[in-house]
Length: 69
Image (cartoon, rainbow, N blue to C red; front, side, top):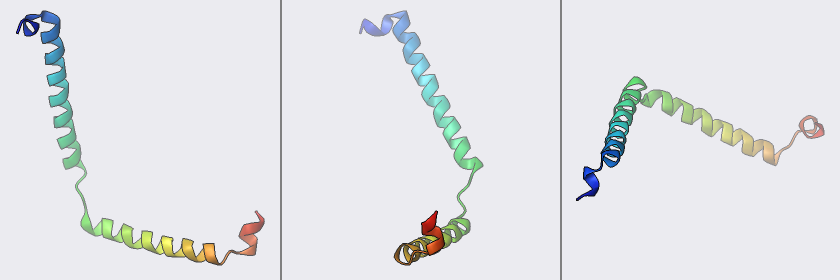
């Protein structure tokens, strides 16, 4: 394993390891900073289904005022 005795290869591997560790720590901190709120997401999904139903209705029943623009 003569390759790992090279100083540049050691530096690159150390840099890659440090970047990987830093990104993992940043990701876990980001996840804990914004916890998932089940009630809020359920409320958003409820509104999304309402918007989808309205969009389907207006696709089937277009308004004259909207189609003139």
